[in-house]
Image (cartoon, rainbow, N blue to C red; front, side):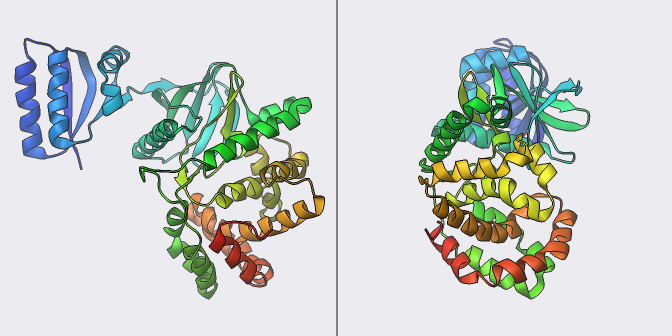
Length: 389
């Protein structure tokens, strides 16, 4: 674990040498340092050079609790590009904020017309918050339309991140409140997803989504018993891809800011076959009813459950480039099969006890009624990473 080193007071040309000696000595004695800037008032270029020297020895540098004045200094010196800079926590209260979207790791609210905040679920560790921020940063660098959070906050005892979204609304809100723009919005939504899936992770930075799901293998075996062998074997032999996925790309995680669609809730940003993102769309819009999650899906996506089927068929028409209703029916049937298997893994994004309840109450029926009778086509869908159409 990194040793916390406190940056204090004013560090300028008069005391920079002493600061540098103490900083490097602390590194020699303790190894990796985590810098805390909560008491730092000023740092000149001499002090910044000492931080750069530390980075040459340690590698990645993280500085927490950076106030506004120091952030401006670090930004102008270019440190924000090479160090992990976490601005000081802003303490806030939820003053009846409007819900913009609900994701697996937290809820996005609109504070006002220009600012949004993501409040993470209770118990989320700060390291997870930083990890999502870094995923968003790397996605932005890769060309993904997203917003990098610019402040950390505490809402009660929950971590949060603040980001700017000018004149923003969620895609779910727009689809609900502007029905005359439905086709236009769906065109833009699907085009954005297809553009995302065309981006390759050339730096191997993002995790593979299948590998993430397989980390929960022990819970699946505990929940399904002998039936687990089949679903795990299919998933382990599924197609891998280095192309980018969002991992939870429903309308509640798409914001429209100044007329441009941008992705939020980047915690599941990963790589894999595009089929897996299409499954996340189907799971909420069409499969939620079967697992008793219609109300939760409505809250997450921001669209009325009565319109779920219309939304899905509009998505399938555009994503699979067909207006053939019988083909859309077949796409829907195969997505139902693929989602039944995928949910055995993705259900583990919820608390473990809830996942165990799913396996106990629903898992056996899904295995007997859906997965086992259709195991051959399900295996082929996952092996090739696409529907058999």
